[in-house]
Image (cartoon, rainbow, N blue to C red; front, top):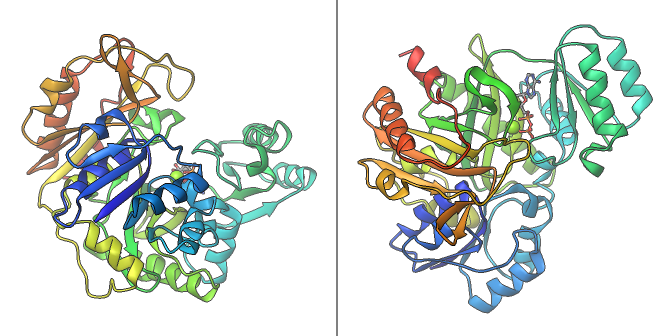
Length: 426
Ligand SMILES: Nc1ncnc2c1ncn2[C@@H]1O[C@H](COP(=O)(O)OP(=O)(O)O)[C@@H](O)[C@H]1O
Ligand SMILES: [Mg+2]
């Protein structure tokens, strides 16, 4: 099989690395990929942007690609799956209509309410004055979200009225996220512990992956601004076997059925962002793709071949399939450029990559790297996802930070407490 993977980050490096291990796969082509992926067996890059659906389709037809896997949300929301399907190409990913689950937070909140799937209370506004009057009428914490895609920056968790009005201003008046802020969703502020629950689905059957936990804020102890994710680990002890059942029965299976009833059957990775408190999981949001950085620890400990799950999802034959997991725990620490998620410099020479990669149970996934005159250099905000696997969570944390400490560049930044939440309860 010839596989095309769309995207260029750490998630795509992980998907490519995992796909290449499949005996069924002869070649993995990344559009556009990154230099870490180019060095993997069976993998090569093609210089087409992940948003250029017309060129991607032309390429997939010319190359006779057997299966396309879409990493990021934007091409899915942009209709890549529909365009490929019209040309007879097979894609693991939801249609444009089904991608509304991530593309519109208002769509999702209304769907959850209609089908009685647990989530916080909310209001939707398309008028600034009405939204502002509503925010002035409430006291205490509240969450203000841009409806559309905002690259993980459109959500403001506000502790008071000043903050919520400022958030509304940024979204609707300054139009910080363009059209994505034409509509705002105002949500009840939920408290608890967050977790990510990701599954393969063919529109009927839901095959769950192991639990995982991301670390969104930039600094230790969940302080500082939100990022694309600074690290993740799997399994997540907050998802006990009972909690797993509850999430499947109250959230994952019902939402897949709801999408079918709405005439938008859902196929692909389905990712629920959850807030768990007092044994009750509530939906914060859905993503229509694999998480980044959750992909790194999850796929690193997935023993099963990933490709049969994807082809079965496309064929509608997932029923009865189950994933085999390594018993080990895995942890990924994201190494970022100093200044990220704000402005940062690129082109810093990275040292220690070889030494870290040679360590037992360690894999260094690339996200934002490039070739410079003096070797591999930084080329993005999130630069590397250093990932380790070990029999216990404490050992995995220990091993991953030993690897991280071997790698450096000027103004490199990473969190020192990835995995601590799992450790504290063991
Ligand atoms: N209703 C809520 N209550 C409390 N925190 C929230 C709520 N909604 C979102 N958050 C916080 O904001 C983060 C980002 O929100 P999310 O809905 O996942 O949007 P996105 O990932 O698109 O930025 C969440 O991971 C969570 O930490
Ligand atoms: Mg999120």
